[in-house]
Length: 355
Image (cartoon, rainbow, N blue to C red; front, side, top):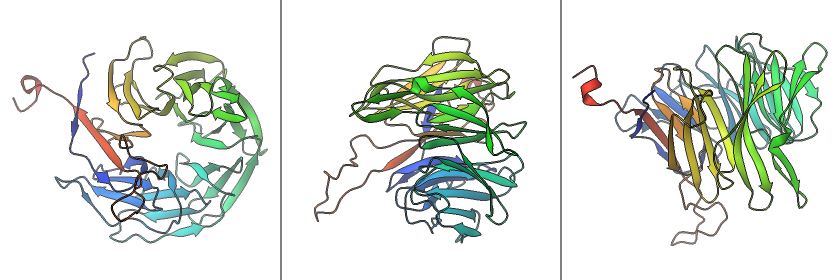
């Protein structure tokens, strides 16, 4: 398979962005920010014009999910607040807001298959279930002994999974509000010099729902954190591990996000130190990547456009500082910035429909 992608004009924000997501019609790109808002970019305009931001949060907006059928975006912030918006409004206002939905940082949110309800996870080591229409909580699930980093629903059965900083993945029995079974991703965790390092950073299912794939790191140490980014695969039927794939060296650190491309291969991004970032297209039957870009900087998330072609990768500008060292001429702190890298297939003119 000959795969090549090329960069195209992409949005650039003045703050660090997380988890860029394409709207269902592909006309808009949305991403939560460190500034406590959700940035919107109109992709139908040549310069990807930035629209009015969705405001209402007062802390980092890292957790985002789009409703499966409606133009609604669910967002959770680092102070534990949840909001639901219609992202197509000219100046969106919250449909509802839930303060203290979690005690602290909401790491992940996910809609059920129908979108009638959703799951959240966070710093308080709990998983919670809410009704979408009114934000009313249905369940609180306790069982993790560490920060819960990710929640995910099975695409067919709507069974709920959650993964934590220790590499523990729980499948929940929602009727009993108790763990039904577990998947062991503890290889992604290391206790080192009084620091807990690693954990499951991302999860995705194969298109047929028969395999679960999780991303993280095989930690080498704490402090500056070094580790080999890895993907672990599990059989959904047996929960047994079926795959271990390394995505680089110890400087490449974390596999931050995983998505399946409509053509069947797995897309992975990694974030390392200092300023290291890779995008890889992976055929799980082959050892070597189908295609790779290794000159990106700290890749955090990926999404695939509804047309199945364009890919968005949320990154951090190499050399931008989050440690307070860099100030402008007036002595003001300069925060991180985030270009969203957009890539599209690089089709030779001789192969293009127009030729």
